[in-house]
Image (tube, rainbow, N blue to C red; front, side, top):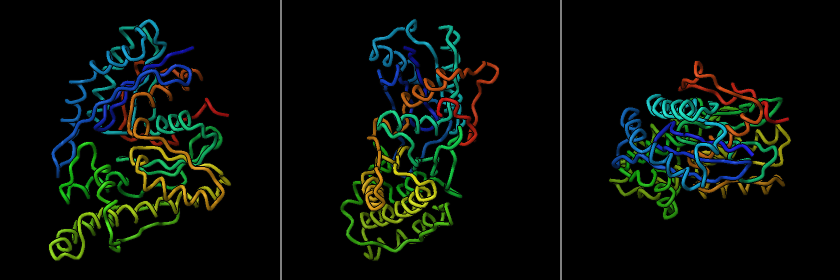
Length: 335
């Protein structure tokens, strides 16, 4: 019964998780929150991670009831993500692996989300909508790879939402996306925004530029409220995501859809995806904020799968990479 300790810190979340044979034993997490109207810089985020990671490690061990002797493998996020935060976490993972004399496994962050989603929901072979602050992809598994059927051609949907929140000075606590979601529930007017789907791909930079250009004028003249803009942005970008996911499901003949990534917590996105799946006679699978948002357990779970399949990351290859595509990884642990 292998137990794997996972370190995640590719963006503004830092987490340490423990997974043993499909059971999450611990999953503490901290978030680096910046003032309204601002984003998070790599250096500042890395300093936050370094300040709390050892406390999180101890918290994870205490919560799981395990000691270092009980851990069989150390997993960490190799990429993709922000350089400085990735490095700060990888250094700790390498150090712990050497101090405890444990094997090390570098995990693709995107595959961590997918494997966590599969574990928690029980989805067998779903078409995956992966939506977060750094990534937007529609993925399906085939012949030992997670194949990307469609993706953003510019910025991620979460990045679009975060930058929109800065325009309106929406709070980053607990996250911009969550606060946009709550404001959107009070929106009553649908403002027409650019809708950009190109085949299987989507583009969010145009809709962001449009809103940055017109938001303050529309608010000043009373054409709409901040809540209306939040509602309109959500409805538009989520409709784009549902469209390309449905197209991928049709192509694959899939009867399952799985939403992963931080934006996947959004209840409105889940509702729109559920409607599409119901019309197709398919099933929708999604998780809550414990597992959608970046966390250590997802890296531990993917690391567990890789460890069981014989993967090991030598120290000489235990660096990080900011660009690490989902389809670069050979998925040897699935048929």
